[in-house]
Length: 247
Image 1: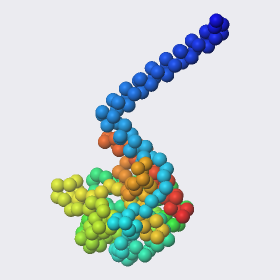
Image 2: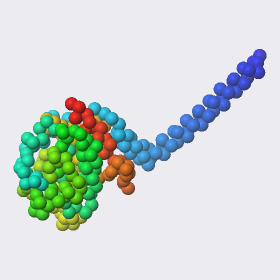
Image 3: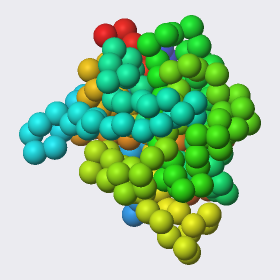
Image 4: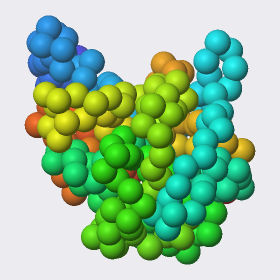
């Protein structure tokens, strides 16, 4: 015959089991509801972009993608080529100085990266204007002063418009286009590309083993998430820059 202690222990097990069962039923219900609404998928993707994973080479047709050769004038009217970036980790973006929407945020994020890694001589930036008819070296110089761009390896470059567009679309697979209906008259990507010391485009892998390729440049760290539910990736980019600097 069970003793009082045994009965008490038995009832404790039953009580704990009941609580676990109730929470289990609730969890299944929540997961089912979130699957129907697509929330689980969105959160999984967000988790994939914030988890530290090994950096990968971005490939095309089985070949590692390397930044193609380029040659443009920078804000000091100095000719800059991809050879000037050898031995440096660098971040690439396409912008224009009169952009009324995403460019100021993108540039501010790059300045944040500049200031975070100010002690590193082997971190550089390559910013290509998509409005070279207006963005002369003199205009780009004023832009560097406006945003306190001080890294001597940060080149804001201008040149032939079609050549720049070809570099964006064929070299980096990002949008760069003149469009009268777009804000400021131009349409372009708000993404950053990360390039290693050998000139290869690199990124981390998501949880499915696919490279993310680019880093979202239009959301700041303090902002966290934008109105569309997209998460900032500047923290992630900082982590990955550190990895490449250490290679």
